[in-house]
Image (cartoon, rainbow, N blue to C red; front, side):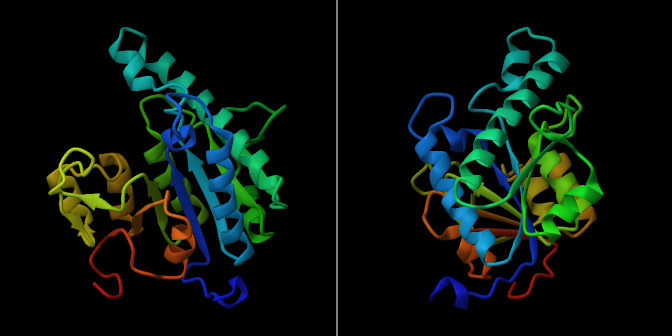
Length: 248
């Protein structure tokens, strides 16, 4: 089908991207070709009329928990990690705007020279005007992950779902990169995720989504076209919900 014939299932979503996704085949840092490929997918989603927000991790540059484990003060390490997410957000913004997509970066840590401060009502207005909004610097507080930030921002802007973009096809009962016999779930309840310790998002983020009945769609973003398929309601990946989702 042509892009104009596609009918999105969602009006407003938040996509959670890991910082590691920006590395491509590099060991660390930002791979421009990979960011450009991600931007192509997001630009196509924007052209469908979907109001799109994003949260990007910073693990490709700095991971606060890992630094803390090696002796760095946890709060200081987390703040460095938050700044890494700003770097990734600016890279994604640049790639999107080169594709004609108006984009705003809103940072939970004020840095007016490069990003707007996070203001909920302004973010919603940007979305209503068709702009992509990238939320940077997590929640602005240490001890919270970008997973939690994604859940919080999604709820604040009234997103209909979180799209959790990963490097594998969905949620498995074990690591599919290590276990060739790993089984993928088509759907899960929030409680199942928490009880089984499945690595969808951290427990705080899952609990926030559960308390507010916000579905999470976990899918493989390395497959071209998957973002559009998810937005148009095609059943790919794993859906984490209260069990009330249509088709479960």
